[in-house]
Length: 171
Image (cartoon, rainbow, N blue to C red; front, side, top):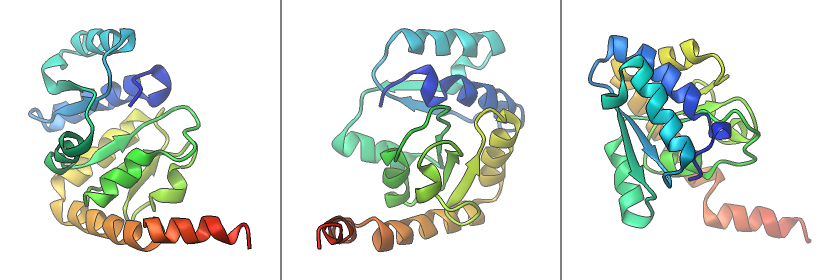
């Protein structure tokens, strides 16, 4: 996706600083087209000595994107802007990954706090880091959230369900 300050890149790095203190080999994989903000994120990570804990993949789509989700333990969407309906949440849940999502915008309509992941204020990087660490340390909960998210995608956000809901507006 678009790498920009509004997508919460700084907040993700600040949270990662705290995560790395507890999970030194933790890695933040950042997917998106490199730009000037990418450079800013790298410099911020260097300031805290965690640049080796970041991987920038560049733009991914199709099988590469799906593989990135499956290789991940969890997905964070720390947007500080009002993302209306972040599809990254849907994609992650379709791959059975727990999601730690922003309280701003439409993530609350997708991610159920304490059931499919967590809803956090991305400006509270301490809380975000604690949720990340908690899921790393408790794989049973992470797996449960991932499975619940997958079931939620099938029941509430399938193509058939979305099409039916959309068409009902015109009946």
